[in-house]
Structure formats: structure tokens, C-alpha cells
Image (cartoon, rainbow, N blue to C red):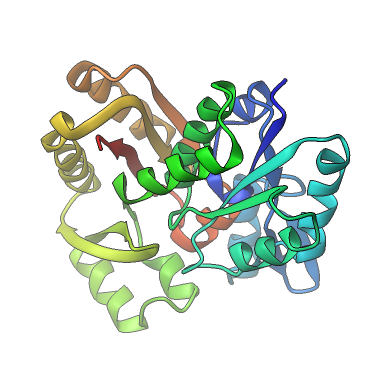
Length: 283
């Protein structure tokens, strides 16, 4: 076992079996419906979240783990003599990073290294897996952090949102935008740029057209891809994810293409049938 413990939070959307296999610590964010608060991926699943939204008619609120949550998670490993490298959800989207920094300050200097992924979902997960590999190679926390900092700007995160309903319910677009987009069947494509969710373009027409555009965008950059790992991450869009995986396997030559389910926090912001392709470009 490495003397470095890699941590992420529940928004990294790594497959559960990977988390177990690579001994990755996961700190859950919170999902709140009224007076009921759940830990993402622990007390509530994505299908359960959608069922609650349909029943209640409104979206949950999401919240970062508190500094106390981080301290509680980190302390046993510090006491066991292990150092910690934690890679967080983008500081542009949540206070998760800031709370982890506060928690790190409660331990001896250098024992907890906190890295701002400036990303979300498996855009974080890609960085976490690079950190896992570096730890396996015997790298120090400082060397791991340096490697991740060099990778961060190279992570490509692009996903198609099937409907603006969740963005509308969450106050992220106007009712008129939602109505017009529904009538015209406009599907927004979102990219993560400088840690923020940024509308990249819109595709009018069938869902398949938007997925094809996203796929082509990725394939156009296949020569720039670090072919170690590509993620297809989705929220209740397994059939589409399998089809995208199949095509990417045929056309990229990547060592591994993994399908990942989006957790509750990511899904509560984007909605069902959201699907993305995420990878790292070569340095």
C-alpha cells in the first residue's frame, strides 16, 4: 500500500469498482430536499433523485462538505502515517475546494495537499486516476501535485444536455429560453472552460444530431488525445453511452474507454440523459 492516500469528492463520478480497486477516498457532497439532507451516492442514488424531483416538482439544493467533514475523513489516514492528496470539484462551481483548504490547515504542514481540479464529473476523475498512477510510481505529494497541475488545462470536458428543464428549474436559464428551446428542439452543448460550465454551441433537431456533433468534435482531436483513458459519462443514458464507447473504441485506439454514471450532484444540475465525452490531450 502506498503511503499516499488519494482523495476526491462524490462529483468525480468514478465507477464504484474503481474507487474500491484503487483505494480512493470519496467525500460526499450534500443533496437537500426541504428538510431532508442526503449524502451524494451514499444515502441517495441518481434514479432516486429523479423520482423525488418528479414527485416534488422542484430541484434539490446541493452543498459542499464542511471543513469538519474533511477533517473527519482525513484524520485516520494522517494518524496512520499516510499523506493525503485531495483533488476537488472546481472552485468556480462550489466552496468544496475552499473547505478542504481550511481542513488541511488543521494538520501538520505538508501532510494534506489540496488541488483544485477546475473541472467536474470525470473531468476530475481523469485527474484522480493520473494521481493514482503517480502514487503507484512512488511520487511524492509535491510531485503528484505538479503532474496534476500540468494536466488540468489539457482536460477536455464536453457534454450534451438533453433538456433545459433542469437548468430552468435550477435558475440557470429563463423560462422563455426553456420554452423556445423546447419548441425548437434545441440541445445545448456545454464545455468546461477555466473551471466554469460554458455553453459551447447549440444543436437544433434530434438528440442523435447533438450526440453526433459531440462525437465528431472528439474524433477531430483524436491525434491530440492522450490515449490512456477516455470517459463516456452519462445520467441515465446507458444505451447512448454504450454506442459512443463502441465508436470511440473503433476510431481512437485508446487503451481504455470507460463508461461512468453521473452522481446526484452533477445530475441535479444537468438532468436525465445528459451525456459527455471526457479525455486528456497530450502535453
